[in-house]
Length: 142
Ligand SMILES: [Cu+2]
Image 1 (cartoon, rainbow, N blue to C red):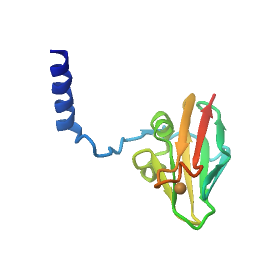
Image 2: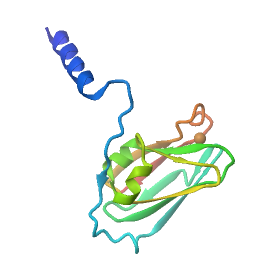
Image 3: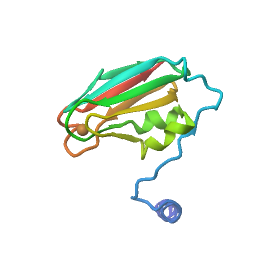
Image 4: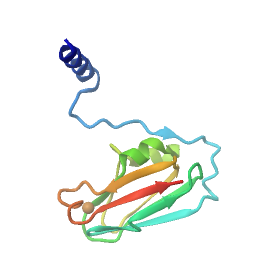
């Protein structure tokens, strides 16, 4: 009986959200009045195959400009679904996040204005084999 209920629930979910297909969760948007102009800039260097710094330390509730720069000649992303879901993102930057990932082209730089929420979050690059090669990191927000 319990198992049947679980199956029924799963079926209902599938109908609504198309299970198995990554959903682009709408990010929480920061208040338009948020002062990002005076927010500190935090740089992350993305290379083959590393994030520098590997552990990002941010202040909870404080606006920050996250600057993700791909210094390599290969394609990479900064995947942090938990972090992005918990943060409030500037309206005009929200579109660069897809399924919790920010793709950064070789030699390119992406700026993200956001307000982090307290917690610990994982970061990786979801390109095939890259996390195994060392592209993992974390974000600590206190
Ligand atoms: Cu990568």
